[in-house]
Length: 125
Image (tube, rainbow, N blue to C red; front, side, top):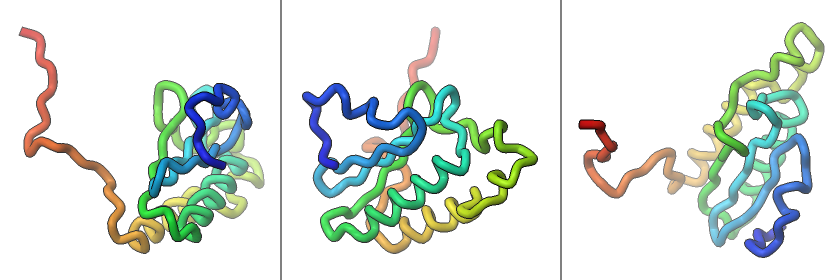
C-alpha cells in the first residue's frame, strides 16, 4: 500500500494491527492497538509480517516503527496474560530478534539520529 496524504481513510483501515506504508525508500510500520499499543499476538504477528515485507522489498532501505496515538507501546498486552496467546509465536522475544536482524541486514538503518552533536531542550528559567 502506498501512502496518500489525501486519503484520510488510510489510518482507519485496521482498528488493531500494524498498518504498513512506504515513503520512498522508507517502510513505516505503525503499532495501532488502543489504548496503549499493547503488543498482543495479532499485533506481533502483523509486525513480523510488516518487517518481513520491508526486508523483501528491494526498494526499501530503512524501516521505521512508530506508535499510533500518544505513545510508542505500553509493552505486552495485559489482556493476554496467563493465556496461550501470551506465549504463542511470534513471542515478544521473537519480534525483538527479527527487528534487530532486520536492522543489521539493511546495514544503513538509523536507530536514532540528530542533526546536532548536543540536542537542545527547552529549559524553564
